[in-house]
Image 1 (tube, rainbow, N blue to C red):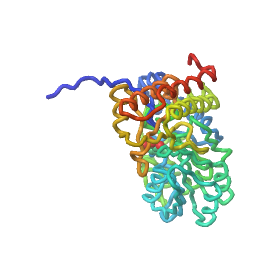
Image 2 (image 1 turned 180 degrees about the horizontal axis):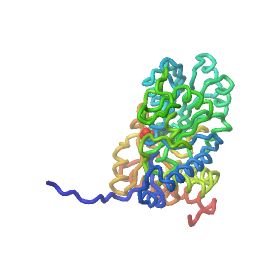
Image 3 (image 1 turned 90 degrees about the vertical axis):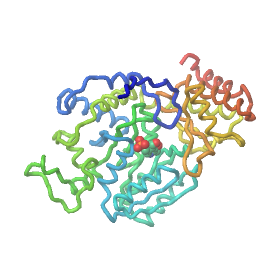
Image 4 (image 1 turned 135 degrees about the vertical axis):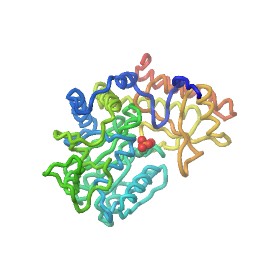
Length: 413
Ligand SMILES: Cc1ncc(COP(=O)(O)O)c(C=O)c1O
């Protein structure tokens, strides 16, 4: 029988669009002793987490809680609870994760309508609104921050237009939550899904979501409680029940709400992690956190450009926490990534679909979004490219980045 050694993971500098480095305080919180899921000490933590999530989503919605599973579990939970077979769903696609929304909507029996734009661009909001008027869908599902292309879709006009046209607006804010503004109430978004492993800097394994009464109305109509736990007041036979038990928001909100309906067994250690992660975000301040993401983005971008590299997403709709760099001609992008990982312990990402092999994606998210990380990734990238014979403005990148930090008075931090 083989004897396995204890885990001894290498320390990495993670500069990808997720998962990113986790604040040591979150890792410590994960070591908190396990509590029973109905222990008042634990349900109190659940309530506190909901309250803090409302602040992060900038909403007064009653419902703001995590789904257990990776970010797409939040998307699946919202979509499968809202979409009934035959419902029209409109999805504007501007990268890989728009396709994911399509895939999930189709699996739930929706009649899916899509509009597409070239990867690297986003939609003019009016174009989406015109399409909504044409298709008249029940749901518009759209990505806010597209990590595959480093682009951010403005939503401030799309959300209100959906409300006016009585269309439900479901938004994937997996990449943007806690890194830039996601104004759920002001933009009139009906359901929003966030991610843990990106700007929240919590490990992957939960997906915080929020939704309003317009969504709840649908849930109530489709609500079916498991026979083994239903009371005489619960419906056990419903016309078109939510197909998934695990992702059934009507039962999940009763688990997170005052009723504490016994559903799944909550992922205790992940809840500790999320509670600590959102606490840290609010302690820093939402506005301050968004500013920090912008500052390090600027420092990185200036360094990349001064080095002589070209940005793929040097556009007004650039996603502030993902910087996409064109791989120079004659350079093997994967060789550079391997060198960064093996020589420097730094991870950056490649991309998908039409952008595979053409760009690197560098994330500046959450706890990874720090001055020393930005300086380190720029130094390592320059060194690797020099070694592989790229034509660079040697030495200029780091100086440009240091100029930004010095002008911002960030010498020590
Ligand atoms: C914008 C966006 N949506 C959805 C997902 C899916 O998240 P997960 O892999 O955690 O299920 C990701 C993951 O990278 C993402 O970037």
